[in-house]
Length: 399
Image (tube, rainbow, N blue to C red; front, side):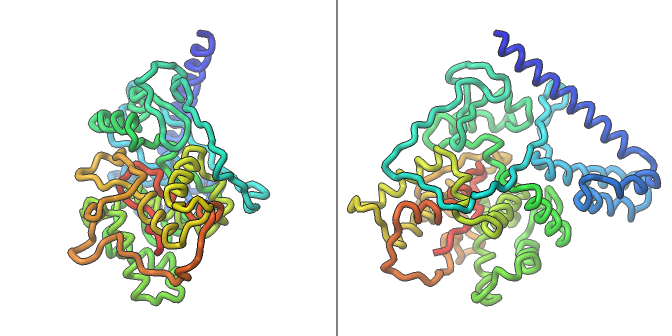
């Protein structure tokens, strides 16, 4: 019992400190504009907060314009701290304050090969107590399908991570084969280091994309053309635009004509990981549960039991096994994820003729064989892409 009380006291202390820090920050933001401008240059955060404050300085007024600028600045701060956009149904009265997340750092030797045996199974068991309150209540705990953490739905609601309207759906998914990702695993942006996050934030601000924006197809293609001109490579501008259009359709499974901010951020975070990390480094990000699912996928394809599969089979696994189930209705970014094959007609379409399953082929020898280590390395980025609960496909595999 002493352990439980100690944990609750720790949580209460964190809440009090968070409230004090929030109040202190609010006080700083309410200072006169001249004083705030003189002190802003000494900010530890530098480019991220300074850029967020520029629109307020240009408007030169503390009347009605101060409200939107403060909200915009707060959104950038939440993105920097790894908390994303504030949940719409967050109740401040009896809520727990989600702490700022410590971003990971690159480790020496992470690019070295990592030996993961195909035949040696990993015994994975979930935690016994809730990650938030450290209380055990048997079947009422919701297990994450990526990590070993478990949660009470009530604790998630108090932290603002589970809207009441989606609670029944999440509880059903968490106890089903489909599974559910906790807020730590659902947010792929948390995999970025401070340096990578700064680079991404600067690119977003340079091309006028702010936290919370819902991108249209034109905005998405314009950002791709300006922010990633090197991606076209040998494809040509027209072929690259077609590929980006297919990716947009995959990020918009409900066919609303808009890509949600959380899905766009996950997509861009994955692209940044692809550019900055080696396959061996990405492999180290996988959890034991994800490695076990990859083993099952490989063994199912290895019909001859010789430890080899064809390149086509490996690509097929990337295109189908690590995809998400298409949902008929949105549910506030806490939709159910699915790791498994999709039906032929389930993917969303950007128009009447293009499907996100239509991928521009990359040249590859048809007779190439893939062993288990290569399969795992090549699939690592797509396994990570399957983490979010959103039904969107955040990284379109190249076939």
